[in-house]
Length: 505
Image (cartoon, rainbow, N blue to C red; front, side, top):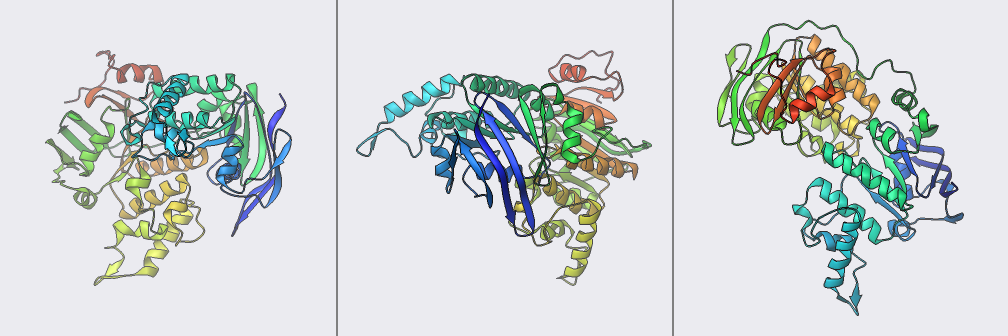
C-alpha cells in the first residue's frame, strides 16, 4: 500500500531536550501502525506535531503527496486527523451528541437543529456498535463509553487518520476485546490508525507494523512475525532483556500484616488476609472485585464497617491515612495523578510532603536536607527530571510513579501497597519498579500488589488472592501449575475447593 501520510526528517528541540531526531514515519489507508517507545522516547511530541499542537523545527509532513503545515489543531482536524488522548477531550456537562458535533452543529441561520444532531449522532454511534443514548451527559458515561464518544467525534469530522494514545489503559478485558473489534472495523473502512500502547499483547494483536522510537530517534520497524514481545522490548530499551520480571532470591518470614473480616458496605465483604516478611502478595480479580476498596481500608482512606488490622501482632487503630502512615503502612494509589501527587507542585515538594516532620526543626523546614534526600532517590531510582523544581505534571507516567515511590521509601514503611503500579508506564520503567518491589521485600518488608495484568501477577507474586464483587474467591501459592486461565476461572467464580490452598478465615 502507498502511504497517504508521510513524515520525513522531523526534528524538534525544547530547552535542554532534543525530543525528535530526524524521525521518519508513514501510514497507509486501512493500516494500523503501532508507535512504541519508553516514556520520553518522543511519541507524544510526534503526536502533537501531527495534531497541530506543536510545529517541527525541521522536516516535512505530506498528506496525499502534498506538503501540509499544521499551525493550529484545527488545521489538523480539517485535514482529517483526529487524536484520542488518554485523558479525554470532552465537555462533561454536555451530552454525548453535543460533544460529537461541538463546533460543527447542524444549523439554520444560527439555530441548531437538535433533532438532526441527535439523529446523526445515533446513526454514527450505531455504526461503531455503541448503544449510548446521544442525550446522555458525558459525566454520566463510563470510561469505555467516553472513548466511544471520542471515536464517534472523529467520524463526525470524517477523519481519515485516527491516533489512539493508550486507549485501553482503563478498560476491562471485555471492553478491550470490543476495542479490538472496533479497530478492525475502522481499518476495513479505510481509516489509517496510529496506535500508542505500552501493552505489547495489543500490538501483536492489532498492528500491521510497529515503529519504535528511543531517545527521540527512530531505532527500528517491525512487521508481521517480527513483532515478537522480546524483540519489541529489546528495541525499546536498547538492550536484550532475558526476562520482563527480575528474579530475586527472597526468604519469606513471619507474618507482618494481618487483617481479619474487613467489611465496607457491599464493596468489601468479610475479607481476611496475611502478608509475611519478604513476601509479595498479589490481589487480583475483575473490575469491581473490591481490590482497591480492600487496601483503602488497610490504609485508612475509607472507614471500615468492621474488622481488625494488626502489624507485627499489635492491633492498629487506623481511622485515616495519617494513622496508617504513622504505623508504617503506605499506599501507592491506582490513580497517581489524582491521589498520589499534587501536580501543581514541584517534584521535590511532592517528595517532601509526607516527610516534612523529618526535615523540620522547630517548625522550620531544612530545604537543603530535603533536597539532598530527594537527590539521593533521583539517582538511586533513576528519576528523569530537568531539575528538582520541575512541576510533577510535566513528568512522564513512569517518572511520576518513581516520585511517589521515593516519598514512601523515605518514610521507611514496613508494609507497602502497590495499586496497579505499572499502569500506563513503559517496559523499562516497569522493570525498575519490579526491581524495587523485590528489593524492599528482600529487606523484610511486606508487599501487597494489585494488578489487572495476569502476566504481571504471575511474574511478581509469591501468593495470589482472588476477589470477586468484594468477596474472597480463593488463594494459591504461585508456581508452575498456576496459570492465567486458572486465575480467570477463580475471578469469575469457578473455584475448585480442592485446589484452593488456604481457607480465608
